[in-house]
Image (cartoon, rainbow, N blue to C red):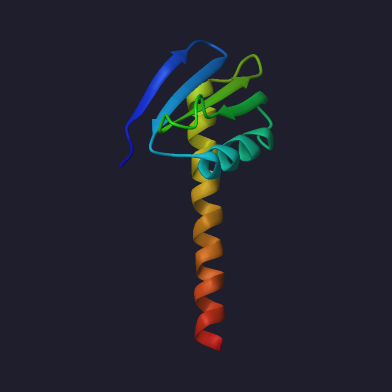
Length: 95
């Protein structure tokens, strides 16, 4: 498990730092966040190439909880990846 810190949390914003991750996870989370109906803005940043950390920023629309929205985004990604894995495994068995 990666080291994970919430750097900022208020009614509409969430800033998370994840150690040991890079653009792959950052881009995946930011893109999926932008597909969520409650997200007003989402982005990620690698502060410096020599630092081994990823920052994820999510801003939600009024009336939404950014932590709940972030969890929903993570569950969507997990479900998508599980589906993808099953498809790949099915194709491998077919060949």
